[in-house]
Image (cartoon, rainbow, N blue to C red; front, side, top):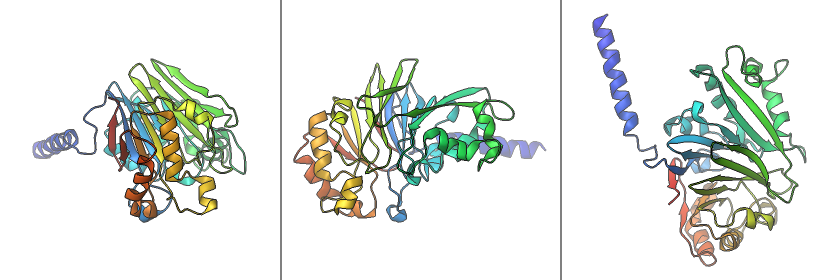
Length: 308
């Protein structure tokens, strides 16, 4: 028995040492964007799909999107769901939301009751609202994960309670979706073809981070929304020669360059890189650089970008 206890203690000590030295974790967590998933909806990029974590005061306070692979990357980042106060879903394409149930399931192991505010777009064009999306998965009667229905009340075996906000993506002005403890988060509708979609802006006394989901770059209100951000995240899913159907959904590099030039962020971070866009990444960045003179970073999974 003593030997087993000693082995277990040594194993835990080694695990703790390994976690502390892990290259998957941000060294600076004062106010930092960590890209958990930097890939797209096709498995040819070798990356997790869209998910972004916001660290503030050394805690992971907000998660934007939870695409495939986010569950694994969240754990690798060293984050704990008990510290997350807000989850923002940009839209309901699978590469942005599929790992949300797996993440929420982790609340079974919370040590104390906790609430997470979750925001997402209202319904339209054949897509559900956030509340409809959550109901289809978690309602007690016939939800796909009915056994997790306790998240609506924080009762039973689950000490997590979720508060849902359906955001009108058609509004010209931003909608405030979270405002607590020095953090203000706003959402604005962006044109991702006909898909209801949102961008999120996270404001703290230490700076501003703006995360855009897929968009074609045609909403002028986004320029003011993203203006003077310390970090602006934009998807680089397509190349300059993309066909019209793709450009209806996604911004070409030239459109990203025009947005960055007008919004003037201190850092531009590119994500949502698929196999094809990775192959022409350098060429696409050169196009963006012709229009935007600031620092440009092509993200990888678990890469960290502190607000300077």
